Length: 281
Image (cartoon, rainbow, N blue to C red; front, side, top):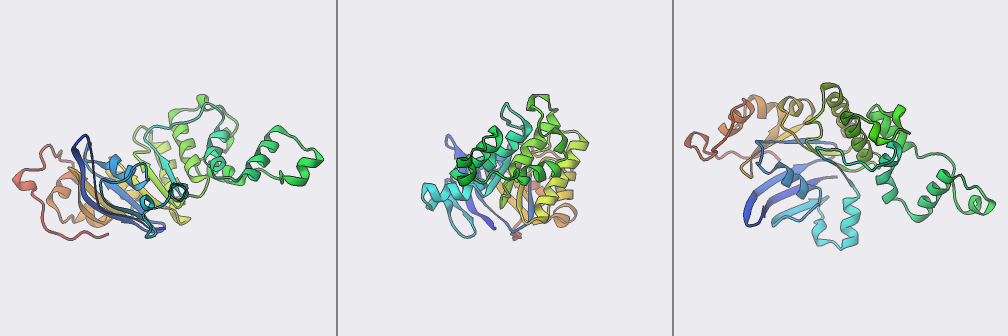
């Protein structure tokens, strides 16, 4: 799977938020978007995950523009994407049922009936004839194993800590084997242990061939997990390149100031003027 955003622009109420931003994410690649608060990172991720179309430019998956597809075709493309937000949004049921939610939406009618029969225990001869009810979907177990929560499978979600809840949200996103994971500050409110577990889960997803587009304020996290970095400042992707180069030898002085910890209150300052350097997509 290859995601490409080309010269995308977007705004709200007449206010521009993104200006001609371009980025690609290849098969199994982890790309992190960094930048100050309010730079447009969440909006960029919303476009990449097809929550809304760009005002200008194009978003393509494997060369196909989902916004040029039929509603059904676009839905099928969306079903290839897993999304995790900054705050876990879980249903008021068990851990297992939450992780199974994405799988349920992607099953055909026969499979959904089989799952209902398995949960209710109905095993009449007629049911056995038409519905295969053998086994439990091992993808739930695998997803929970990746985030270290197999022992909480039957637990109600209101018994979880905030970090555990976010791990359930991540397990739900990977359970159906998406081609693309979009992660919007998924560890910003987590302690080091839960952060490490989710970063390991990102590595596992990437190793399995899943592409990852991640927004983060954590520079150390970006160094640890990303293959490439995009630097988004004032709605513009001013620089894109390999992680080591972005942090150790950035081409744009604004990037250097940002990764060094300087706050960019006014990116129009003369000493922060952009330089004409090619981006590496």
